[in-house]
Image (tube, rainbow, N blue to C red):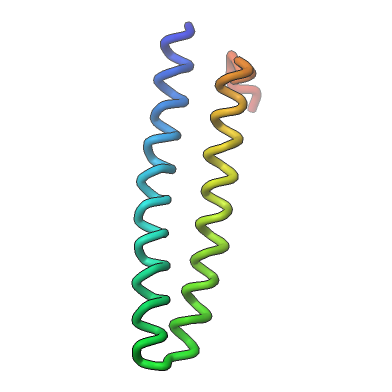
Length: 78
């Protein structure tokens, strides 16, 4: 049972980590090129991507806290 929980948690962490890397990279690219071409639209969209990065970091932290405290649900409740 513990192996199943760890595998499920690891899959979530792996997917979120991948999304975090992609979103962070896209944020930096938009920010840099927005400043180079003086595009307010690109710069503002890059800061919107930054809010997505923060949300993904919060999701990663919460999954790790739940996994450390062994609070993963044993069965689906829906």
